Image 1: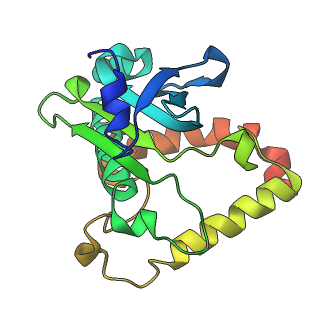
Image 2: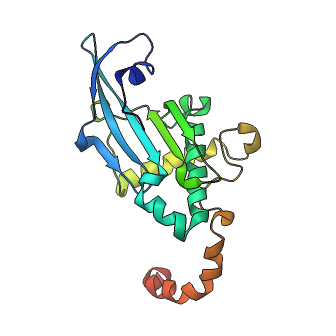
Image 3: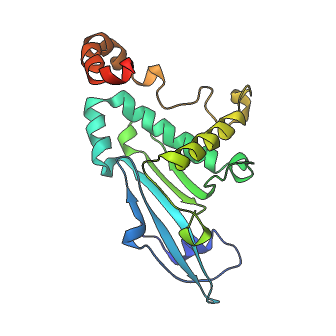
Length: 207
């Protein structure tokens, strides 16, 4: 909850002295369950750099507050998902992954609260995929971007395919966000919802 200070960012880059930093609004990203921003760094020697800061404070996010009352099991799932994300991105596996560039965590703070999920907090300083380094961010993908993304995801999952996840320490035994135990109420609603879903996707199913 405290404002970021230059010393917080200097700690990520031992031996360097930070003159200033800024968080441009145009490079901020606000989602349903997290906020983030590219932090632009100016070093004392005149050099420049960047780091991406991701912040999750469940109690400050309207979607999380709503889930607390309407879908508490899903809120617990979200907290576990953020915990796994932070642990993986801070692991040696993420920083040395071959074939896919990952936003490895330079540092992270993880404060999950299983008893009161709404009080959970996470913060990550991530290696930045900055535009001046040739990167671009897209929300919805199509064409070559979609194909490249599928190939990257395939390479990512192939790294752990058949591995003993329980010994990896930084992955779930079963990957994914949609585990049945995190959404038990959805299974009871499938039968009643099916006619509506069938009508909505009828043309796609027929094709």
